[in-house]
Image: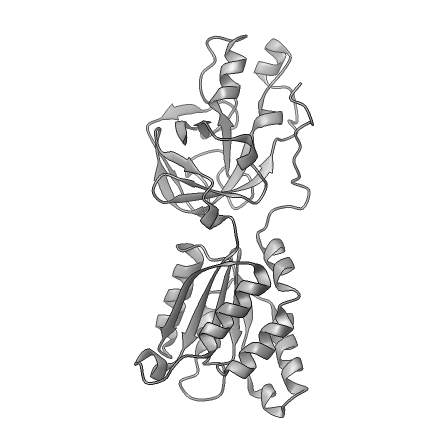
Length: 316
């Protein structure tokens, strides 16, 4: 098993110092560290095995000397792929966003020995689930996190009371899973209550870390139809084209489609899609969106397109 060997921080760029533990925070990285912020290189990782190779030349080389935040031991090279998610300790999850980097200028180590391992072997990531980690914690490339994660919420007062069998939710889960080859992490029925819906959407996006949340129901004109309002309460920006495409496709079959108030949006890297409640509408709407969902999810991750593997074919 691969483990965390050391954790290091520094308020200034450059070498970092070992500390007993660090807090990883979603959307930030490590509070107080020079690289914290809303960007794709919040946290850096480096293998102890690579550091030990450098210690053959520089025996007194300290952990953190290359500016790495997390020193790992036993983490296999094949686990390091841009986009892959790693679990650290009991709660934290990182997503790899870049392999290697182009240093703007030679560092002190390079000037001393003529080489540096960070440009070739450094791994950069962002925090997608918060947690505290310390030396000895496991690092896992968990298969559960290797596919897109999605949840389906059916919004229905009668359904939440057990007075109606939910048909739209199971169908949505089946169609979404096939469209994105995803892993379903939650399927629930909630009442038509704006605060309840909004709270659960935030939890699914920020704590459960879903890549996609689909809601069914509550998008019409009835007084209790509040799904669009709850969604708008939590998203950071709308994706109007997706909702417009669903309505346009529906209008080709029935004029009632123009009464849908469904919206689609993005909270962080998570997509939230409002669908109608009937199974027929769920199928038609997801058939409209299915061709673009994989690409939409890929772009929504926020990983820059130029963050390809920068390492040379050979370690040299």
